[in-house]
Image 1 (cartoon, rainbow, N blue to C red):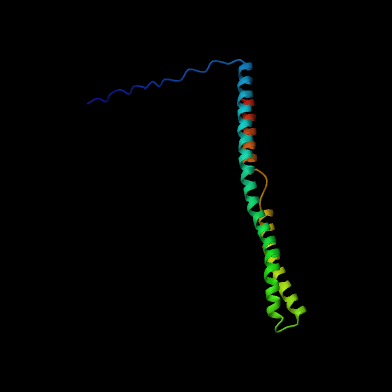
Image 2 (cartoon, rainbow, N blue to C red; image 1 turned 45 degrees about the vertical axis):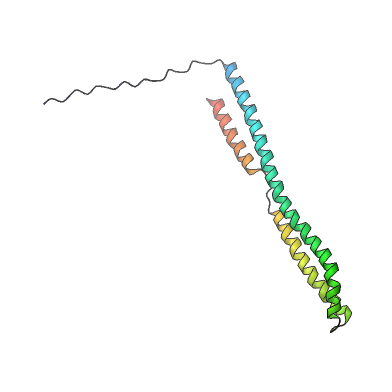
Length: 143
C-alpha cells in the first residue's frame, strides 16, 4: 500500500486592480466626501429634532408647574383660607395657604428646570461619526 502523492492545490488569485489616475482618485474622494457630509448633516438634523422633543417635555413640566401654581393657587386658596379662618385669624390662614402653594409650585418648577438642564444639546452621534469619518479620510489619503 503506497501513499498517494500530495498535490498542491492551486488557488486563483484576483487580478490586481489597474492603477487609476490621481485625478480619478481625487474625484472619487470629493464625491464620497460630499455624500458623507450630506449624510452627517441629515444625522445632525434628526438628532437635534430628538433633543428638541426632549426639551419640549421638560418645558411642558415647567409650563404645567407654573400654570398649576397660578390657577390652583387662585381658585383653591380662597376656599382654604375661608375654611381656616373659621379657626384662625384670616391673616394666619392666608399665610399658611400661601406657603403651601408656593412650596408645591416651587417643586414642580424645579423638577421641570432640572429635566431641561439634564438634556445634552450636543449631537453626540454626529460628533462621533464625524470623528470616525475624519480618521477614515486620513487613512484614505495615506493609502
